[in-house]
Amino acid sequence: MKPLVHALVFLIVLSTVNAIGISPPRIIAEGMNRGTQIEKLVFLSGVNSRDEVTIAVEGEVASWVSVDRELRFTVPDATPEIPLVFRIAVPQDKPNGKYTGTARLTSASRTPLTGQQTSVSVVAGVTLSFDVEVTGEQVKAYKITSVTLPPTSEQAPITLIITIDNTGNVAVKPSLVKLMIADKFKQSLLSSANLTATNAVAGHTKGNITLVVPQHLKPEEYWARVEVYDGTTVKFSQESVLEITTTQPAQTTPQQPVQILLKQVVVPPTVRTNDVIKLSASLENPARPVSAKFLAEIYKGERLVKVVESPVEQINTGHANLTAYFTPTEDGAYTVKAYVLYESVKTPLKESSFVVGGIKKTPPVEKKSWWSKLLILLVLITAGYVAFHWWRKTHRRRIW
Image (cartoon, rainbow, N blue to C red; front, side, top):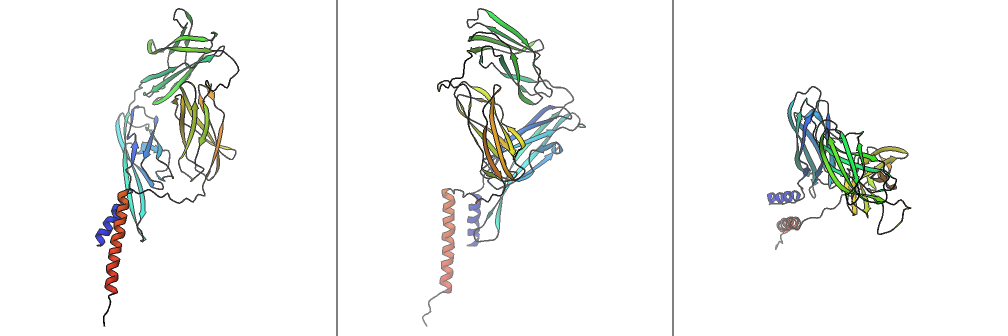
């Protein structure tokens, strides 16, 4: 009877185990120069609140890899996935070649057995692999993913935003950008400009290059042609509509809002030290699609602790959310001053607050599946059956 009871208890514990995962499961760093580094963001999912996660890096690149948090940490409450930034720094003395390694991430939880002092430890794991190529050569490899010409008002300069995905190991920028503007029938060339970028996009990163062009066009729609050069080669070309609007006082017309609205910033009210906090910005975009990012200034008292930001994302018409993450290292009260930045426009600040430390929470009661409930019922029936037969043996009715 005891083996049956133990088996049923083990199945009940096993039913609470979740498979954990990591995305992406592989980090590839090609064309890395000695003395350079790269950062990659991955997400760990499927872990339970208050589980203990351990990260162990092995292989040829073990000493090159670092993580943006402790190698052993406790999962915060209500965290569906955990962002982890892995940094690979190539040493100065490494010869050219290909190097590999792995990071083993394990999640351990302890489930107490009812009525006993011991507990069952359940461990799940997942592997993140690294493939790093070290070279002494400069690798120039990039692509232009988009060119944006936002509408502008008369007398205001034209803003040209070039988005670059740099997969090489050297900083890149266009050697020349040509902007040609014609009337809406494409019959007359009204203006042209040769532009030179001052900033560049670093290796192994994505970024924007912004150019500003003075203009004196009348309010109207025009055709704009953009040609982006790498040396004498046209790397990217695009034709699009350029809208010049009339300069006038802002009007609050519900049908035609003129700016992104930051409705609210959602943060957990209380957290523990070293918990990963998810900061979520709720946006409303009543107009055209636009690229934007969410920034949050985090203060402890009057001291600015950190500025965190989301990736630049395309915000379509309607409701959207942008997310950034912060890990507090000190107890105390914090204030969040947040805003959204798009096309050099900054939304009004929204404030929120949270408290770190001094939290006592009751662990959430997890919902059991129907078969888990059935197993529990079987355990109770078995225990009752054993107890009944024990009682009959020890309390037999005597007739003399």
